[in-house]
Image (cartoon, rainbow, N blue to C red; front, side, top):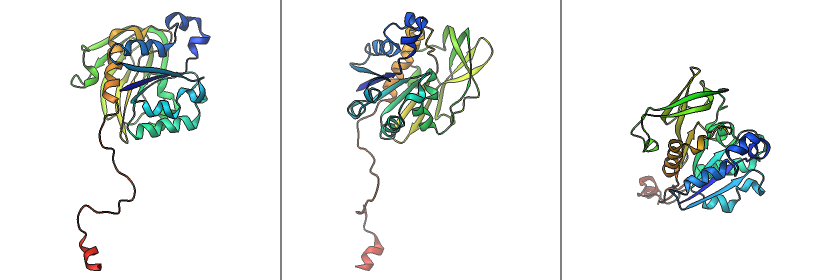
Length: 244
């Protein structure tokens, strides 16, 4: 399978604090650890032609991983619609952290996808609430991050198909941090942690969840559903026999 890691890649260019944490970009940090488990991983960024998401790229992509934050509105509507359609047709999508507010995720959720947030260098514990789910393979009872941005409920998303992990923050808030959805033939994972000024994507348990998510959401080989006009019935229709 082929994974494409998409990142707007703006903070890394404009903020020295982010450059120190992710000198080659968040997309490259994610691509690097994914190659430990997967042979075919590429990256795409906002400022490339068509945001790096040409038809050729999307046609070969089995899982698209999406990180965005400050430039959601710069993503072209036609590109967001094209990604949405690919998900309907079976491409997996893993949305990370502030990608919750991306055009792609909002289109697929059909809601505002808003939430509460705070930057205060606070501890986060991400608790496993479904230890049987493949997304938690290799994870213990929780993931503990010493410093992260807080996201708090209410998270304006549809009720997830599966709620897999829930966060608790030092300031007292909780958040649905690992959720799955199905749209058309595609699987979607939302995973919360990953603020740009923290080294979250170097944490081995966070990496493990993203690796698991890529494998779980990947487009699977098999016969595609048939839609539209279907003139030939599987069985003989009695009323049609009478007409003849």
